[in-house]
Length: 379
Image (cartoon, rainbow, N blue to C red):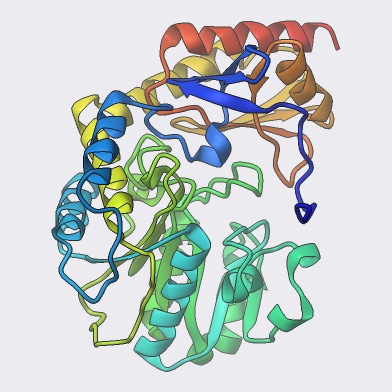
């Protein structure tokens, strides 16, 4: 049997990782400035993370959600305290797409309405409803398409208001990323977010903040939307939550009432996933990683902002989009093959996406900065 070939692959086979570095099967070292799509939040193989998982493996790694699991309670308490959403409830699942599916479903259960408003440039996942609110026709199969899903332009308040005027009484929820990642590090304006919140309240629609990529300290706030003081009804999270262990979560306003069987999952909230997630929160708190994300992000921007071929820098914390005056693919390849540095791209072909671990050190950022200087100088 062969693999189903859906991923364009670099000819690199990492076999070892530590901190912000990877090593391939040939012994070559690489600086990880992408974290596998913002997944590696506390660095590869952090000692506390490793120890917590090893200890749990010797106890129990899995049982279903038909029994008590005190680790879920500990995770919910720690997440509530660090995020500032202590009065919310937590539903645990396995991925960002699954978190968004459950958020959309919960909103519809809550108000009995069926339409969902989403935005241009969005990416919310590849599963049923999640892909239907993703702005990429290439990955929306006919079975996923429905007129229930309405697209509005990003940061366009006038069109937002017009859409609500027409469909407001039918809109169950509005889903928006705290910062668009795949869309090219697109940051919503404060006015735009407040208008969404205002219209959701007026029309009894649920505001869902997708913080799958922009959450968990990535933006320099625990969740990106918290910079503006907007409070979401439902928040989804995943990527940085488990530092590589598959886990997702839905933070739910207490106005939503739970009932047996309303939501469910086989693997979500298993013992290993909870321990991985608890370890991430421990390290984030103990090592002040949100503050470090702010400082290192600012340092990187200041060091590269005047380099040639850079048109703009879109950044919050360590969620960075470097807009070039050309397609970024050759720059990305040069960084990878000439300088052994992993970076990312986006649907905006000119944007180089930078998503290092939140505990990145200055000397490691300097490796990237110096390499980018050389690559851009030689264009």
